[in-house]
Image 1: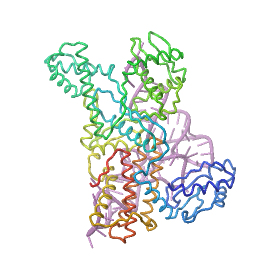
Image 2: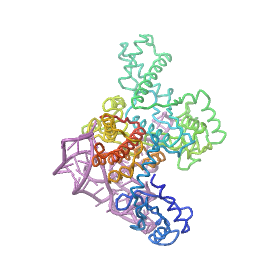
Image 3: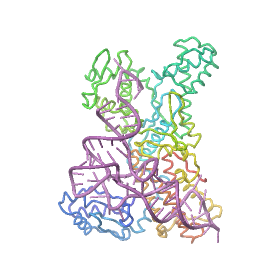
Image 4: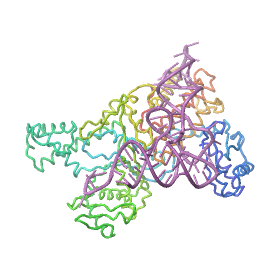
Length: 547
RNA sequence: GCUCCGGUAGCUCAGUGGAUAGAGCAACAGCCUUCUAAGCUGUGGGUCGAAGGUUCGAUUCCUUCCCGGAGUACCA
């Protein structure tokens, strides 16, 4: 937001010294003495111009005509940095622009007119969601929010498979528990079956609904319990997602790819294009020919069943056929191996795979009282996402999943998450919102009249200027977060906003000061409220009006 | 073995090829007759896993190695 006041001046100066299309970037110096903005343009031009960076910087400055009401001074430092010190007036202008954006402040247009499909969660209906799904859901939903804020029209998609081996195992597991309920204690539980208590619950429901009518092990009775299992699991999953403030708008059933002939069509096409071959009774895909770092893989087993790669390619193909400008997958680290194969397949079919962006997140480990909480799917002892939300609340769960980069392993510390105090970082952000709401309530109670117009030039305290400066970065932060699909950029930024606000609120009284100054400070507080609220909304976290 | 992701303060983690590497927590010292102290201010704390290389400049890019994790099926 600050750039716009100075960018054109620099471009003009560069043009004057013969640089037509410079790669001009402004950074935020870490040290206050280095100004508010800085550029390394002189250093990047050094090679091209074959001159010393400091001389180039000097050249630029001598051609730079600065608006002294906005720029206090420009100086050269270090190896050739050009540091720009802004006048308070620049912040006041920025404040006007930010407030003019209203509730929309932070939205951008980089994705305007474009569509995006983002697939996340995509858990099969074989059980409850666990912590890994939680991280997937939080990242996916927030990435979708980021794209919407950047102007994209976003489809939130959930891909699931209600056929195949895993579902058969679910059916067998329920059926075994059902047999046990019927008193047939010797009925063997499948070796790789699902051990969770929910299986017993579903079996109990089957017993209540059908009595002993399913006692004979037939395809039909297995189908019946499978259907019950699917419905039970989906209902549980949807409920958990709802608790996390997540709604998806497209549910894609893998099985439909088989029933509507998409898979067969793809197989025929791969054969025609000479991308597949038969060996040992199976159908193989020539991945090694598309990309020599890959190896050929079976796509249809000798039993006639496809492997997961085939529907994965077919499914992603539908996303390309649905003409999205951007396609995003959120995958756990355990799925990492399939991505190169899917990409290679799509590339060979002629699609532009640069549209496909795959976000990989690493695993979550749960800690409590300094000890790791072991999660085992086999024993069914895994800590479910529901239990976590129940224990610490959806806001804390979402924030904890988002406050770290996706590519790092996440340590979820239950002890900290449980604490309703300053140790819990999410409250630090929410407290800003609650404090401002409280301030506004008091203004109303005391019947203080706040004017719509305000004199921003009264805001000259260093805490006020620091807060304005931080707020002015919001739009560029949402853009960077959307471009990189990194929610954690938002959570880091909001912590900076919170810190700047709390300092301001500590240093500068609002109520009881001279009325023009109070008026300006109230507008600054309201602007902060907008930024915090918008940021928390992107993260899918509530903005409490009191705490 | 091979592929991918990590390794930064006591702990958990930020860090866009830039300047003196940051934050939170923990530790220590202060700040409430006034807008929520779930807050503010200050102090201490570093071989950025190791070694080479590229660069005017490397925590960041490249190579090799070490440690932790994940994946390497006619499982998904």
